[in-house]
Every structure is written in C-alpha cells, then in structure tokens.
Image (cartoon, rainbow, N blue to C red; front, top):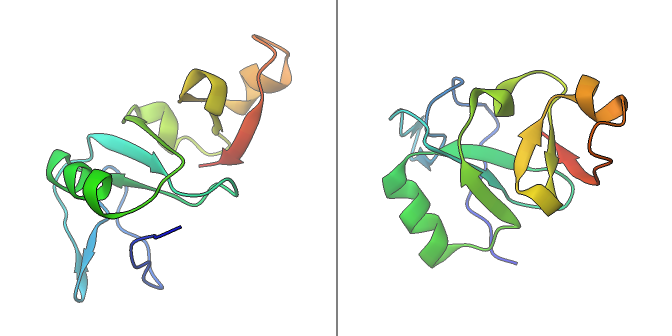
Length: 101
C-alpha cells in the first residue's frame, strides 16, 4: 500500500492537509480520506483528491461533512460516511465501524 507522507504535525481543521515541504495546502477541505483500516485519515481539497486517486492507495473517501471532525465520530465503511458515536452506540442502524476520525 502506498501512502502519502505524514508529517509530525496536524493541519488545522476544515483545511486540506496535503503536506508540501514544510506546510499544508490550506485550501478548504472538500473530501475526507480514510487511508488505513486502523483509521489513519485526512482532509483534502478537490485538487489533492485527484492527486490521491492517481498516486496513493486509500481505504475510502467521501465528501467532507462537518460530522467527520466531531470528537468521537467514527467512519462507517458499509455506508461510506462518518457518524457521531452517540448514535452509533445507541444501536441506531447497527453499523460496523472501521476506525475513528
């Protein structure tokens, strides 16, 4: 599996986290990428989503939703979106989570 470089820091929320040299892209995030089954994930703009599709391997990607950034949200692979754990734990939809965001 080929993954992009991950720096030792985090990009600010709601922004593309594609790292170029010593900084992140910074454009508004439009996609949420789940890189690995363990939940390694990031946000990216349309330009860097196109790059990801052609350059790296990833588990899933879906249009970014603010729910993706809520503390405790989980990615539901079968439904290809993120949910808030309170709903997940209450049994709503009986879902299988593959990682955390």
